[in-house]
Image 1: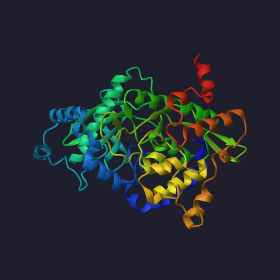
Image 2: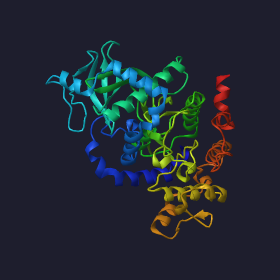
Image 3: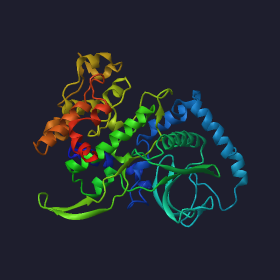
Image 4: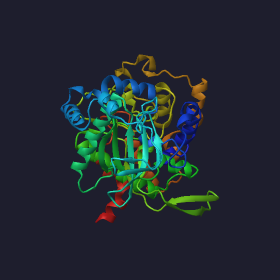
Length: 418
């Protein structure tokens, strides 16, 4: 997260400006008016929409999908019968969203008190749980459209598995508290969390997290993802928007170096959220995973393995690769030789015009990884050593998550646990 200080942030701002016209209709309600990206599985809606509606992430041949279909049938009847049973007070809008108002009750238990966010899948509302002393929860209301209902049941299956595998809540994965069908809308109830790491950065004027904050957040994220991988699950959409603070309350203090007020979090506990695109290792899934801006080089070049590039935001795959080269150095020739996407390669090198407008943009907004170091202290050296090892192009040489968790950068946390 440290290296997003300039490259990630400046490009994210540009992306937001370009995306504003098509997201204008979403900019309302919840978390100070933001479009809640936490529950938006992929901003490339056209491409994701196609992959989800055509393949439902390839689960049709899997036993887990059969379980989901069976459970879905037992919890909800055919959508036509739902419509027959509806009263005048229950209706959908033209996009399939449930029409609701603050004060409405769902399942005679959850009272809607506000909208947190909206996405292609549906909406997320804040509710009071009247069976739990009015505890506040986040409730995801899926559109009354078959493909979204089936995708939601896949997410429910993953979330139930996570709950059963981590009954002691040792790992930083969001907890599903309940789920039900409401007149054709699958509703998933979650613990209510705070802002995403990206939204907090944005609200804090993009002041970078401190080294200690990065260490504590990274330790939780690495352990959560390692827990998923050990249990044959892959999130596939890790990004700052999908890492939420458990509590984003903060203190304000004056930063003399930056000459401005700075928001400092009271707690650094985080949770990984949005398992709508999660896959089991044994299942068939599309080779195009992750939000475009965080795709690994092997995903772009055609070989699917694990990777998360936290600092790059781009407009197309070739520019994405060019930014990687600017930050990490040239892509090894033997990896370029393997790709079937020959339009990216010329004479075993990335076919990229550095003197084009896009090339000048990359040079201006990206620089070699080590140049992002704000200090030369031993701790900063350890952080960037870890980043370099995690961002290795060749997946066979890349550090594993287990090795990353054991990296000397995390020694202070290990000492605290003893």
